[in-house]
Amino acid sequence: MALKADNLKQTLESLKKTDLYRTRRTVESIEGNYVQVDGRQVLNFCSNDYLGLARHEDVIKRFKLAADEYGVGSGSAHLVCGHSAEHHALEEELAEFTGRERALLFSTGYMANLGVIAGLMSKGDVIYQDKLNHASLLDAGLLSGAVFSRYLHNDLENLSIKMEKYPSKQSMIVTDGVFSMDGDQAKVTELAEVAKQKSATLMVDDAHGFGVLGESGAGIVEQMQLNQQQVPLLVGTFGKAFGTSGAFVAGSEEIIETLIQKSRTYIYTTALPPAIAAATRCSLSLIQKESWRREQLNHLIKYFKEGARQLALPLMSSETAIQPMLVGGSAEALAASEFLFQQGFWVSAIRPPTVPKGSARLRVTLSVDHSTLQIDQLLAALKKVTL
Ligand SMILES: *Cc1c(COP(=O)(O)O)cnc(C)c1O
Image 1 (cartoon, rainbow, N blue to C red):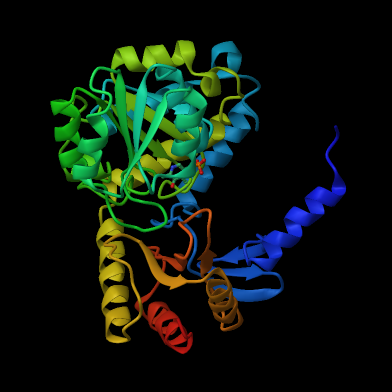
Image 2 (image 1 turned 90 degrees about the vertical axis):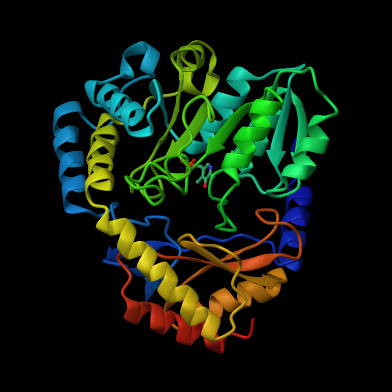
């Protein structure tokens, strides 16, 4: 039986009726942190480019130079002829940066998570996931065929109880480092302790921690000083603070070699453009060298939180650049986002199924490129929204 247009229409209608319909706005041009969107100039408060590296002069220059040298596309998968010297050097630099034996590039974070989890786990194994983990981690668990067990958000006691059910299975505990829609951090030290006690393997997806947490920007494992033994599987992405695109996993020699042999989202896909790898190497060096970017971002986070507190805005408990405000209903979150847009601020409304039902929110993200004046302006507009 073929797809029925009527059924699709019905599904679309019901999404509209429940305020869960998703639409895209078109970015026409970018100038600093102002973007021209759908014919309107707005201040961007929803980008994950926390350190302002996506438009950094040096990063762009390296990207162009490498495109001149290697062309635009990589031409094939890594295992065929797509693995360039730029890819290789980036992997070595990431291993050093994270203090792991090796690192392996993937084309996106989504694919890294699918490839790592489904490449290492299978039927007969068990995977424990935080309820608020990123969709790609949850999908990866399902794809692997392993038993899928979700524990309450950041609740170690609940995790321990769940783990009693399958004491002898090969098991993995999987968590976001910084939770992408909440902005709070995983209790990674405690998770590493539980993993050790119960001999499970801990995987941390630190997409939002890399670049912004830790002394040199090496993320939550640097901040909490957790080594390769404690966190054997560490994923990072380049689409956020690195300001480029792609992802990596860092870990032991055996794990990386196994992934090269077994990970289907590594093997059966075109390698990232070499120019993206080159630009990412430049971002990495800026991340390590320019710690003022992290300091300034932290200053802005504090500034925003203090302003929001004075206005009694419904901030969630986050110390990171992700600062969500709980709204509740999807219609209300959409209306608030639209109101802000009309006032000249781009703040996205996050709705189910990205977040649990009844917890729709506005998700403000801060960047080092914002000024305190711009934050004041945003706060003034947020004050006018009835949340
Ligand atoms: C963004 C994100 C991903 C996906 O990374 P992409 O490179 O955008 O595919 C994975 N995990 C987390 C926690 C993320 O925030």
